[in-house]
Amino acid sequence: MKKSECLYLQPEKRNGMIERENIKVIGFDADDTLWINEPYFQETEDNFCLLLKEYAATDEVSRVLFEMEMKNLELYGYGAKGFMLSMVEAAVKVSKGNVPASIIEKTIMLGKEMLERPIELLDGVNEVLTALKGKYKLIVATKGDLLDQERKLRKSGLLQYFHHIEVMSDKKEADYSKLLAHLDCAPNQFLMIGNSLKSDVLPVLELGGNAIHVPYHTTWAHEKVEEENLNILKIDKLVDVLKFV
Amino acid sequence: MKKSECLYLQPEKRNGMIERENIKVIGFDADDTLWINEPYFQETEDNFCLLLKEYAATDEVSRVLFEMEMKNLELYGYGAKGFMLSMVEAAVKVSKGNVPASIIEKTIMLGKEMLERPIELLDGVNEVLTALKGKYKLIVATKGDLLDQERKLRKSGLLQYFHHIEVMSDKKEADYSKLLAHLDCAPNQFLMIGNSLKSDVLPVLELGGNAIHVPYHTTWAHEKVEEENLNILKIDKLVDVLKFV
Image (cartoon, rainbow over all chains, first blue to last red; front, side, top):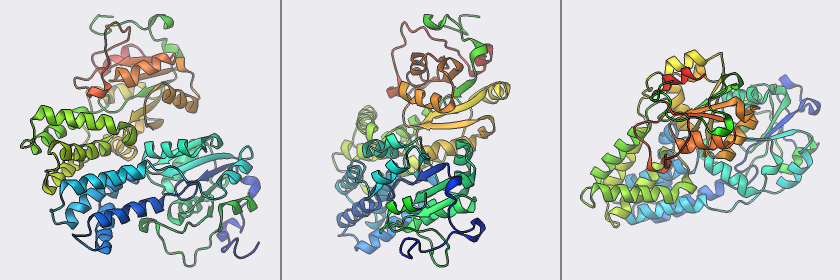
């Protein structure tokens, strides 16, 4: 195993590597693990900043939008619709109540365009799923809007690979615990693969499960955690998963 | 059985009454079956119409809003966030692009207040769930925003009664079919109880399952279907369920 393939070892409590023979269920995150997502949000945000450029600089609009998203997170949860509502509220705030209806309308249109974008699969997705199907029970475990995530899965053409799709309101330890109970799967039989340390890796390891981190070049600020001193199995490309299972 | 308790018989294909001994899983709709919901949407819509009264009469605002909701339904799905986004878009349309940011802000606030309302259980809910718990596997099968429905269930204090909560992006025959497969439950072992003929009763009967209709005084226009000539088990009050199971 080269350093570039596996930058960190598994936490000590689980004796290093994933015990391949224990694994029964493999969970995949969806956004930015199976397909491109965060860059679309970023692009939408960039266009939103342009719409408001006469009221504030890009950085300031982005700052207010992120502040609004965090303020609304408990109430709206994750996903595109909450993001759209936060953009509308941010437009009012940034403009000090002066934003015209035409810009509100354009803001909504930006969100709708994002919702309607085609799905662009990430490299190696079909190869990995084809190789693992039949050997393991494959599931998707994703946060976001229920309908939106279901639609993206349908559009992705990947539904055929999965035994179960779980759209979760959050991905904390308790949420995974519920999911595993529901799947009748012990934590050490579960491997989660995803791009977010915070949502896909750390809570699963905490439960005593297995996880592989496949970082994506863009991460939403809310999902960022300090990586230092973490002792986690991290791969460069999704296809490297096949070296471990 | 008095006429007021059961206005219609079961479809002929299932020989009249519910076969109590077959039933293993009972599904409850949530909004307007377990707790008050539609009146809160109506109240929010009334206040929204007031906000826009200088641009159009109540009926016209309501008409444009419903048109917007229907146009957006496929993209947003069911639930409060989609409703909020449709209100914002309707405000722009009704005002012919003249609505000020302050009214957009107030519109968002109306939606947030609706999301934050306490849960008001309907009559007989605790009595019915207490009587049925242990005898059957009880589940909730509801449409709407995932996080919002989960929050309402938590706030309702009813979680203890349920084996499983299913938030569905839609409640058509195929959706129930998937749910039953997932629960490993044959259609004739399933009884669905809810206020919507269209979403809770007809698709379940079509599948060969059982259903009881508990109408609620207010029904969203989108959920309305012609009731004439339907041969369906309909009760006045939720507590009457206990006469059949």
